[in-house]
Image 1 (cartoon, rainbow, N blue to C red):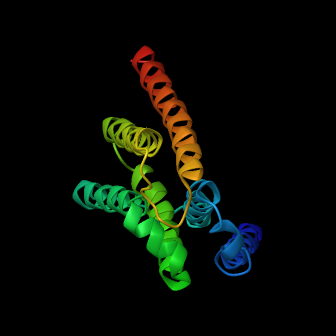
Image 2 (image 1 turned 180 degrees about the vertical axis):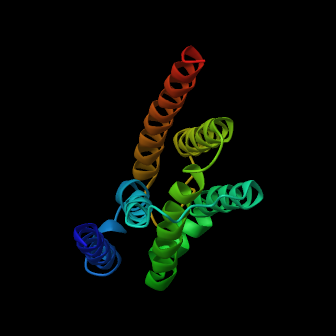
Image 3 (image 1 turned 30 degrees about the horizontal axis):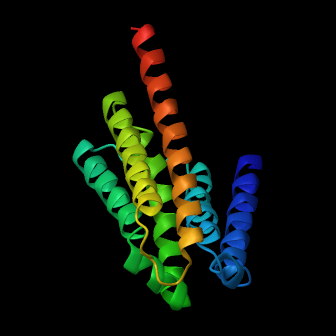
Length: 185
């Protein structure tokens, strides 16, 4: 009974945060590229992860569905990092809210899938996410042309630098987990 109440409170908090990030704070978060891509998008993904923690019995057990789900998650992340998608989500609030919902679902599914996935697939998935973040960061830093017309070159380069730092941290974490698991075998 007590756990049920905690889960309900967590769902209500996630719902409130989703609302705040999607409506009252949306204009402020969409004002700069770092806020939009490095705060708003990951916040929605994290809310999905937290939401899944309220449903620990929800997991994907079939490996085929798990792989398909991971492909959906990667495609979602890639789609919302494309310059055209970034521009459209800043210009059209409802398109941005579609991103919010998609990231919430992607975060929810990530835990549901990884909870019951073999270790090797987890490492490959984390490595692919790191590589994608690195490629995005390098593209944003290297190109001297504006990729997202809703932001400035300086914002684009700043966001690229942060993506590179996040990717290096993520890749380092992935390697540490990999080597730690190899030592235990």
